[in-house]
Image (cartoon, rainbow, N blue to C red; front, side, top):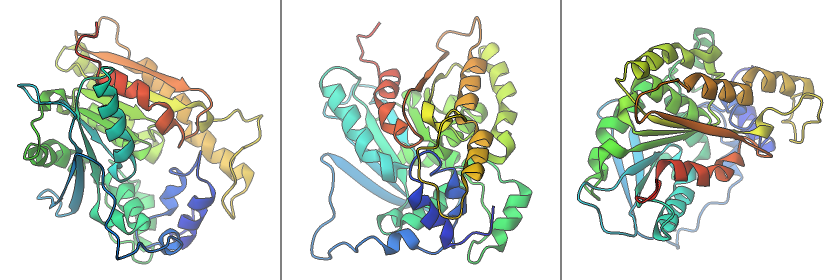
Length: 343
């Protein structure tokens, strides 16, 4: 792929479904703010919108010195003696609203256990989509190919390449729960991590490297293809720990069927300017989103696995890389937060 520029942001706008987050590697820090420039500035005379019974905390991490924004949705219920389970939602700037209301309203109806939903995001997201994309492109990835790192470093204003997944995982484990507990009682032994796309890659890396950090992992459309599938390096050691009975996490993996369309069928998405259909098909084939997820589901199944270890998932028919985030939401919540009286 070519040098980083504002072109990447513009292309991303024209390809908003199957390849949007895969092609986001063209949208690194230092690119021109093509997206934000087209969004009208909010009126200074009106207050920002907010969600009922939510709290927001901005803080500077002692791990990497960066600033983070956590959004906390309080359950519509009294806290149990041990505290609520918590669901940590990566890309909280985009998913917090949907997840918070879905989880809370279904809990009120008795379909789910009451839980705290915590969105993980960035203060600058309030005014800059470009900045948000740049941060997630570095902080959600566990590794960067040396050749890619060199290319990124050469881009104007890009700064030093940063594969920050391990730092962010430490922040999620140590710093975020401590701040959530100042607002509401949570049971850290019953926490859930959700991630989509690069967030799914992050969640898979977290599962393999520190499966004890979360009770449940909701992994949606993981970018397993990233850096020549380097995330798989930790899989064997994880499976050995499960087989020995050292860890027993619960895992839900899912992907949309249209993320890897049949090569014989026409592409339904509008191609980005400058990209040919052949190039798009080559990228889709290399990413192998559906094949990789199916393979992972199969490999993680361990005959005679220890009590508590559970792996489920599916391919959601008729859904793209973007639409699957909402189509799979109900199943993921049901897996993570079954009602207390569920068998």
